[in-house]
Image 1 (cartoon, rainbow, N blue to C red):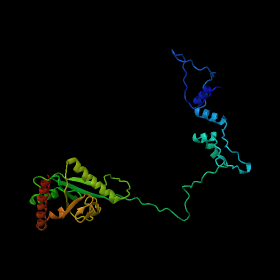
Image 2: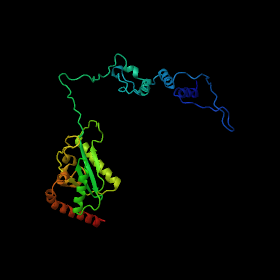
Image 3: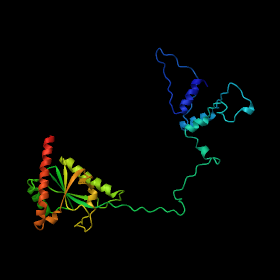
Image 4: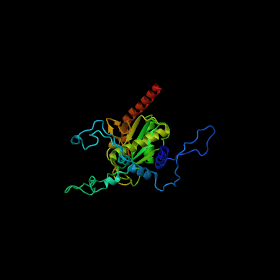
Length: 301
């Protein structure tokens, strides 16, 4: 076979279709004459046919310019200066060298069994952590101050809060509708890695989402009630320590990145007038702070 036929054999073995002109175009050179073999396409895949051609091809060798004595020649072909283009190298690139690994002389690395364990050492069973539970009622005052209270705010508490804020000169008119936040959001909550961090992230995401939807520019938090453990009146269970969830330090909520003012529980102000009189100086100071913050906003704009 001439060179053209050999080239077409290799192209066909690699799955590359070779095209030849069926008609001679005007002013074109005649097609090179050669002996074409009309053979049916082989049923074997092109990859295997290429492998067969590589197995039949002899490995070319390149002798060194200076022959060496037999006792000085090395058994390593690379050390003796010979470059061998072996078909096995091509087979390794094609991923066909799997038979060598399955031979009895070829040792495979031993893999440690997942069931095998060190005698006398037992893995300690990990107890899944449960999410923290708490409820909050939220009321935003003119998009500036966020009022927070543990649990669900009753209608009497909402009316009392509106009266207190009006007396301090903070809220004019009806009190905005309160939002109720419950954590965890799902009734059958799955195990969590860090319950405290996830509770903080959940509360921060709720406040940030509400502020983004309604265009709030929050400046301060007004917390009515104790920040320590408070009983849940609905289920009788104790809520998580809210000072840890809000992450209060030096009058600042690190979770929400806002300054925090704390007042007594609204429920304790429903009965009697003495508690309201005791709260009045703090309410007056809070009203002055409301005016000062509003003036600061006006000066900034």
